[in-house]
Image 1 (tube, rainbow, N blue to C red):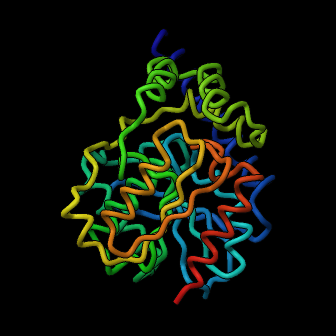
Image 2: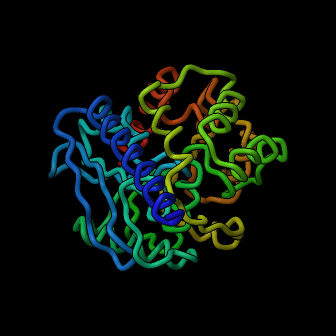
Length: 293
């Protein structure tokens, strides 16, 4: 009986999360957004897409716990000239369903290879935020011929380590996930910025959604980064509490031969990419970079 009760409770949590996920898409994403569940060797991957079908592809990878829905401001703006594909990571909260564990960086890159194959995309602009940026950078090192341009939004564990204070404040949320711990942490990191309430409710719900341990690892080596020939834009958040934005910018510029940086003024790690005052500048920087031949 206890097992049945626990199973029913988990099912109710998942159902509530998915209903909130769909509510964010309906309320925040532009009309004409399409949704696809594509097969990969690691499970079914949800992709939310917007923009002209014949436009250049732009693939977006969200940070941990954020889901692909967090990119609504970018989809609406950048989808005017690109076919935007926002992807739910397998193993993270979202509508992707894992069937085979993703345990290594090699698994992550093979999964993203499969996603691009199903989308019939030979080469795409690839943009990631936070953990999604870490994945995007590793993918560009794995398959530079499939990445037309690379955009890293306040990338973590790419060019600098986490600040100890950030990890300390995140600890309660990581050890005992709950809406309360998530809200407390987000309020601290964003200096109590007003985040979109519809999406923030989904972020609360994600605390109870079953997830697997994310693939983590060391930062790419300087030797590996020095060989990357993909045009790259790094967009640190000026007031990020995750790491030192100036260190991220300086290190990226030093290590990457084809990189440029532009710090998003006033932004914190978790106000990006959705906080309205920061999203407009973020969108402008990404759009300008994508238009460069």
